[in-house]
Length: 368
Image 1: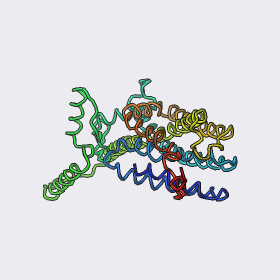
Image 2 (image 1 turned 120 degrees about the vertical axis):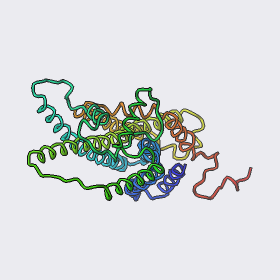
Image 3 (image 1 turned 30 degrees about the horizontal axis):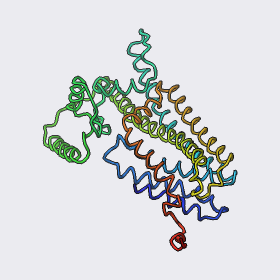
């Protein structure tokens, strides 16, 4: 709700700015998005699994709504193209980060595949393709088989419970008892993890020292095992980070596709109703405004399809499944934000709602 009050304020400041200086909003908007995203992430720090949806449906939704309004009411083709180019530039920066992470994960997958082929070179296994999801789940279900000694940066349990079968719950309990994964919760588990580390430190400090010997053959084999375990651990950590970023980026692209189309549909329907007379700047809506909105939405659709193509070709998985899962599991949150946008934010400038951001309130002094 705090961000819902920012949008009208930002829109009012934009309207009060002279037309020649409205390009300054191109600088202020990314700064506001950066600060708002960090504020939302800090507020939702105990719900890590829902951070992508929470940030996308709050900060990015309001940002896209403001961009849609600015593009449709700018009255200048140059300013509209400048807004679109700025948003596309930010999207390209996000894609660059995803591609950099995907390159690292792809290299780890290739190393793991080559090591598996060396162990069993006589077998042609079709399942040994570069499938990111299969590789991550294979390692996480049996970390010891891949020489993984610690996955403390990876939480085993989700922040909120999900439905599981009895067999799945038993398997999760077995993995939790292994002690390889990070804390189950956040506050209480961190305290328990600190006490666990202290007890381990005491046992290591006061325990008997074992005599060791250096053998070249065993040392080289043990180093190889350690390297294999590190690569598997990096695959899990980097792969999960990539999936997390892809989910957020897919949600952002979805919002940037849907919100402009929803805004354009709303304005087209509104112009067929008699109460359009009570909306300010209603004369600025024309064919040019519709064309700008549709171009902006089309570019975002292309961005979403490009993300799908890259991840499908490299890792044999589609972010569209992540998008569908997030929208299905967080349906009420999506509906609440869209309701807030349509009912409140798109109608706050109505004259008969008393909105007067000039603070003159001339309708109070007019005679009946």
